[in-house]
Image (cartoon, rainbow over all chains, first blue to last red):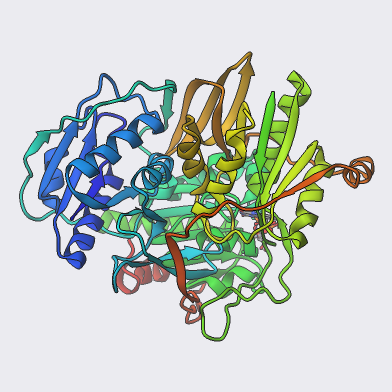
Length: 317
Length: 246
Ligand SMILES: Cc1cc2nc3c(=O)[nH]c(=O)nc-3n(C[C@H](O)[C@H](O)[C@H](O)COP(=O)(O)OP(=O)(O)OC[C@H]3O[C@@H](n4cnc5c(N)ncnc54)[C@H](O)[C@@H]3O)c2cc1C
């Protein structure tokens, strides 16, 4: 019974999160003693490369367009799983994966766990973060079929091996009821949930006009910018940058927090970052307790100095 | 418009999370509960706005024991017309979705509203499970919803941007930030809520297919390394050579 990975390609080509999903699918298949196969729906440039990340075969179901309707896509994925003899289905924990996983779980009468952090062990036990990062829970799935979504930035794709063959799979594509009318994404910026480096700032910045140095740091590092909630609420920064318990939850390699106090609700969304750097003038700021590296100082002095140091480093590396 | 809003209760955001001594249960001692913020701030308020604009009714739906009625009363105080409580412990997402679907199937709701996720188990599971059980279209992470007749125009969060779409009722929507602005219940609302009906119903049988066997705490931070604010080269050096993240 194979592991089937749905590899997203809503913009017409395979996404980075799909590489992570296949990387996970291969780990799961190894743990379960089976093979990992990948499924793409519609146009999916780069599908063959999924072989380099562990898919022994890639199937494509062709559609007239890449119009995302969870009802249609879920029917296709569930039918494909049955046709291909897969008992485990893997999705990215993305806006697409989250819309599909529950639907496919119902169709396959499968147990569902979302945003998992580990490959299955001990039958089918997987770990995930709960209480917005304040704890972990290990779930056991008892049903014969299983559906999981995998946490972003957790299973690093490493290309090895060769391309897989892409075969067309004959699955009926039902008519949909949702008509996608537009898509707008900011080009050239890694979306927050996928970002490995994040530079974030809070109310300590005093006003939106001072964000130039934060954007400069992000540009030097190739990082994505984020912010605390009050800063988004008063429209100093766009809402999609708001991280924390009621914003985006992230787990980058590096999180640099500038002028953010480290309230419990803020920490909840960022405390799974691998390395945290805090810049704050108040040595008592709670964020220092959650930090790996701290700089106690006025951000208006420290950040320009850090930017210079980073530029020097980048020039030499 | 006949609107259903599913609400969950979650520990208050300032809760210090503790587990039982054998790490198999969440320790609820001293925990204060609130309505899940996404359900309250976005799903409920947007439903109320649509009712105000187009007429109709807003019904709250909650799966939980009697002591959870405080949260339901708050939803009624904010403006919902009535509530349904399934008298059972919400033991898993699948269990909850099956309760919503069993109730909603016969009631012909135009829109089933939910929050995008709960802030305790962060599953984001119930909305999609319910939509499939009801055989309805599903829009996740919606941050805008407009209705005209029985057609809706929505936008939703996608990685790094947004997507817009159209769909006719009935459908399920999970709500994210920007969908609406939080409403604080006023005195009149609180008084009126006391007289609004809460219809208590029994659960339908549903198996938990995924159960929690163990909890763990996040690894403790070993302590912050403070760096001289005059010496940012040192910070860069540590990030490169010690932490190896740049
Ligand atoms: C239900 C609920 C949910 C919430 N969800 C979230 C959430 O998801 N995300 C979130 O971020 N918040 C959330 N909050 C809000 C949270 O409680 C805090 O209010 C918020 O995180 C504080 O933002 P801040 O750190 O930017 O501002 P502040 O707390 O005002 O901190 C500003 C910091 O900047 C420092 N500072 C000031 N000037 C300088 C300077 N010149 N140089 C260096 N440092 C300086 C100060 O010392 C201070 O530590 C939530 C609150 C509630 C009640």
